[in-house]
Image 1 (cartoon, helix red, strand yellow):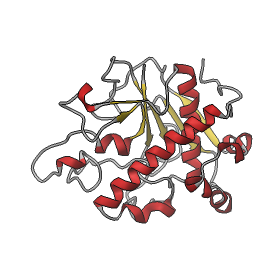
Image 2 (cartoon, rainbow, N blue to C red):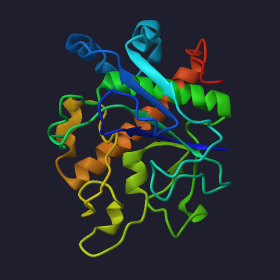
Image 3 (cartoon, rainbow, N blue to C red):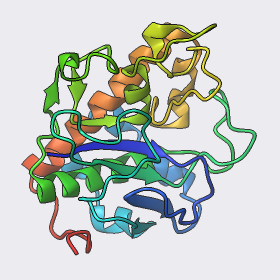
Image 4 (cartoon, rainbow, N blue to C red):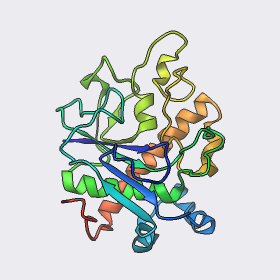
Length: 239
């Protein structure tokens, strides 16, 4: 059984072709519309979203078969360590530009609008691959690589980075290659769900807490989409 990881691409909203699935806005997301969705962070309920309208705001690209492993997106966890099946990677085409930082997410930020599409696409993949979005395994499966378990079948790259051992001079091992770890190539994809949450990434303790909340939110929203039978078609992703 595969695992799934959510990324942002650190790019424009144009297709990269690097991840199994990618999605990018067709045009600028209306600020008022995005604000109207922010309650979903604290009270997630997929039944209250007009999915037909929401999905129409984005282009969705399938680049690789879900049975094909890549070596691009998630360091040291590109396959499920339990059985070697692919880590299916889903990327939001966002967060591009040299001006992106924890405090400022640039001209193409990842919004709650994108987080919702992430959950929807994860739900489709879970349905196609028979993956339990709340399932997990212990670090004992791969003790030389993983830490801070349990390791969830569905996660964000931020959480995966925090759960991946990354030792070396000047690094903080308990943080893996997450932000504040000392790794110059740290990753914090979806550590927060919307720029309004960015202030919670201001120090290591609150960043880890927010990262874990965001990953749990994604799992919960994905699970609710499945339980409430929100998916009416597979958007061609079963082809």
